[in-house]
Amino acid sequence: MKEFIEKFKEIKNIIEKNQNIILTAHVNPDGDAVGSGLGLFLTLKENYKDKNIRFVLQDNIPYTTKFLKGSEEIEVYDKDKKYSCDLLIFLDSATRDRTGETGKNIESKITINIDHHVSNPLYADINCVITYSSSTSEIIYNFIKYMNYKFSLSAAEALYLGLVNDTGNFSHSNVKVGTMQMATDLIAMGVNNNYIVTNFLNSNSYQTLKMMGEALRNFEFYPEKKLSYYYLDSETMKKYNAKKEDTEGIVEKILSYYEASVSLFLREEADGKIKGSMRSKYEINVNEVASLFGGGGHYKAAGFSSNLSANEILEIVLKNI
Image 1 (spheres, rainbow, N blue to C red):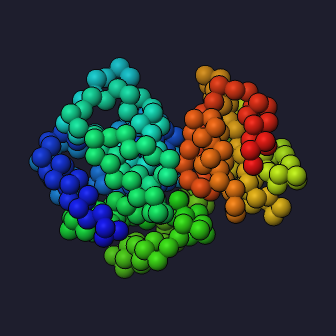
Image 2: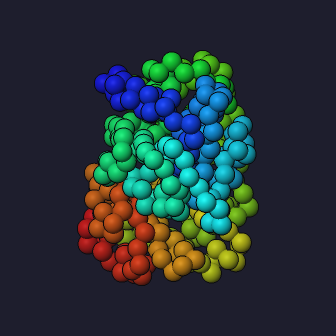
């Protein structure tokens, strides 16, 4: 990422010129949103002790990321409060709308967008979008490294978790030499791979396991399109008192069926909208499919939100894969 050093310098210069800084990331945050945001948050706090720095998200962080040191400082957006800052930094958000209430309502003088999604339209005043990066956490790590910031083991653990999340524990095709070098550097610094993976991937809530069981019992397979499909309605979520974060991992799990090449997971939201997630193994570009519904993401991982019914969405997807 050396070709982005000038962009990193520009971002560092803006950070140094502004006193009140808020970081945010996408709704229903995953490990990369939490990891990249927390890693940058802790690093900026350590290096700029005189600045007011906050990390604010629309939604609660997943249960599986709460073991990270410093995660208790992440704030959940309160609609009854007024938020304003000098600098607002968007992390891991393909669009400003993807940040929900934070991107819509937090007032700022200048904005920075740091992301790796190919569908990102460069929506901020300053944009650092590196689409070949495995994760936003990898971008933040390189920003910290090349800008010679001091950073703690807690920040390193957060960034490592983000890397594990977006690489599928180093199993996806986005793993490159630089990705493994980052992992090596962080482990050399003291990050315990087993500790991160055990807490993040193997410490699920009761509701998460129940949601996964429902998915495995009820998912459908369309052999002519090699599509694994599952629709989760709000009544099933209420039955188990499940939250949005308890559905993480379903879209990947149904893709693991050996005959499947692509997966579609639809979840009914409280407002009646449908949240869609797609994954693919090989040649299918799910970013293009998600764009049909106003969404996007990556070639092999994308998402969207729609007012259409689940059956209507499924019909469109089947016609376009």
